[in-house]
Image 1 (cartoon, rainbow over the protein chains, first blue to last red):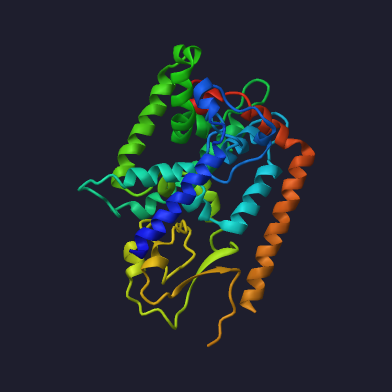
Image 2 (cartoon, rainbow over the protein chains, first blue to last red):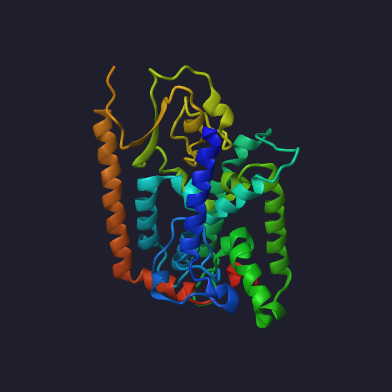
Amino acid sequence: MAKNGNDKSRHIIQFIWTLITNAYLIGFIRGKIYQGKIKNICVPGLNCYSCPGAAASCPIGALQAVIGSYEYKFSFYIAGFFIIIGTLMGRFVCGYLCPFGLFQDILNKIPLKIKINTFRFDRALRYLKYIVLIVFVVIMPLLITDIIGQGFPWFCKIICPAGTLEGGLPLVILNDSLKSAVGLLYGWKCFILILLIVFSVIIYRPFCKYVCPLGAIYSLFNPISVFKYQIDKDKCVECKKCASVCKMGCNPTVNPNSLECIRCGKCKSVCPKDAIECVSFNKRKTN
Amino acid sequence: MKNNKSRIITVSMLLIGVLFLSAGILRGENIIIFEKAINICLECIGIG
């Protein structure tokens, strides 16, 4: 009961946040994107700035735009943004403030007999997102440039299914000129999106677990973020209910601030002894 | 002691973040982002 209640309130927050960050709803009717000043700033989650509703910028797209420009090869602006958001929240962003996370959460609720919690290479594949971050978001936009030294946003160009879902599909449907420009690349990106949809029904958040470069960045801040989980060892009875309910494959009793934890709160709500606490900074414990 | 160290790390990170963000704004990085974001990104949508 508590588990369902926690999930429901989280989904409400996710939904409201998705609406706020995609508040330019008229864009979905006109087939145009928002061009106001708010696009100077980034949203914490993965939200394509070419989504007709997007009110602000995608941090991963923005990072590639700056390091791919001929002027700068390092982005202080985005690095600072990641440090601030990561230090404050860590992967809480993934659990609560990412529209693409909500999309995968909804897909995983589709009742299907085959649901995979873990598999042989699950743990090893978790490192893939760090490789995607380094190769497609940093190295390729920096090194593969055109004649004037401008790089391309390779992650957006050949991988990002969020861009296809939020930008590609609505814009191509609503614009005849874009429709006529559709080619092989668009087909490839749609294929990736379909693949992700299928996997999301079977596996919980496959994109967040194995591919998302934004999740990879925020994960590094989980151990030091202001918002953290803490286990009260005096209360914990080692029943392992928290570990068994975690869809991200974490074991809070071993590491409450695991790099994979998206702070969904499922472990907290199933704990029979309320041994898992949310803390801001580390609380001083008395023995 | 461990808690204090952790707090110092967290506060230092926040300060570094603010400094970096300010430096980025001073360099005009937000303008590059703004110009990219107000035009349809053909790469992002799978056309470019």
